[in-house]
Image (cartoon, rainbow, N blue to C red; front, side):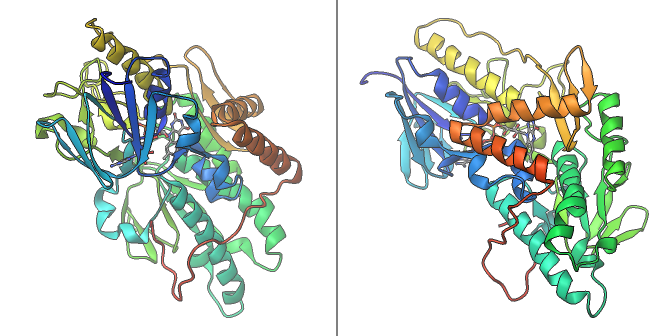
Length: 425
Ligand SMILES: Cc1cc2nc3c(=O)[nH]c(=O)nc-3n(C[C@H](O)[C@H](O)[C@H](O)COP(=O)(O)OP(=O)(O)OC[C@H]3O[C@@H](n4cnc5c(N)ncnc54)[C@H](O)[C@@H]3O)c2cc1C
């Protein structure tokens, strides 16, 4: 193992894992670092937040993924900064040298003009976020049951979701189904007439990255489920009780879920010129970071700006995975003195689910919706989960949810506070 080049990969998300796996038989030493000890399957976070799946079934320990990989070691650490001149990174557990450094740190929530009130918002970017959201919603239901004896409970029951992308619509659909099928069974004495689920989207359509037909179908599914969808609607402020809408309308709720955007999560120490719009790291066609030699970025954090893709590729799991795979091959080529191959994204399709038998799928040559789309969505998500146990548990939970119309995972797991306020920590 000595005299082999050292590849340091920061981030065990879709990009980092796919890259590290692709080095299995390569003559390199790989150090994979993540601040968590698990890989998080973000597309199913909304299922955790709404009690459809348990958190353990969408996460997988990074070390266990790489059992049997002799050339890969794993460290749990927060990477703080890069010293380019020394080819070294500084982390919470010490410094590490690299021959090639790969930044695969993904993205973080972008609060835009709501940054000042972010502590009043709930988010859906990590497993703690999803568990926090689940607990918050069920805690509100418990409080509403008591409060309805004396008066107003709409603030406790109603939910506002800001952002009509996949995360927002999937969450809205799942909450609407909870309201219809689950809450009446768990809280038979609670009057749900005052429970409104509102979804706010600034652009004229939902699922902006998908086809017109899929966007329209998603809208009609949500309306059918009782979600009030506001398109072309900017939310302007939130004081913890009232969410102010651009046309001076206000919505009373203590549950505002922010899924309105993400921005890149780069590491300090890169040249200023290497950071572009949306805080993403600017890379060339080989994912090499602008103005650097041995540093590469892949996945959500990276943007290769071209005439065809003026904003860079979309922040999607398949982009991250494909970039990871190719970059591993390119690094091996570099170590052999060969030329690298440029990255080309192969779009296999995009999909989103709104509820039972309600999903939309855009394949490059075929777009379809409804029950078949929903079955395909479930199958592909189960297959994409890491580990046999996770696939089996997710399949079992979804089958049981389907036949019983129930979601049994409504535990409130959070430190007890006298006066609960939404928090994203
Ligand atoms: C709610 C939600 C729903 C989504 N739905 C879909 C979907 O349906 N389809 C789809 O294709 N995509 C979806 N996405 C997007 C998809 O999850 C991302 O595109 C994908 O995760 C990007 O992979 P990545 O490897 O670049 O980053 P990530 O998967 O985010 O991984 C980044 C890793 O880096 C680690 N990290 C970050 N900073 C540091 C640091 N300083 N030190 C150490 N470690 C660090 C993090 O802990 C994390 O493990 C969704 C995202 C969310 C949040």
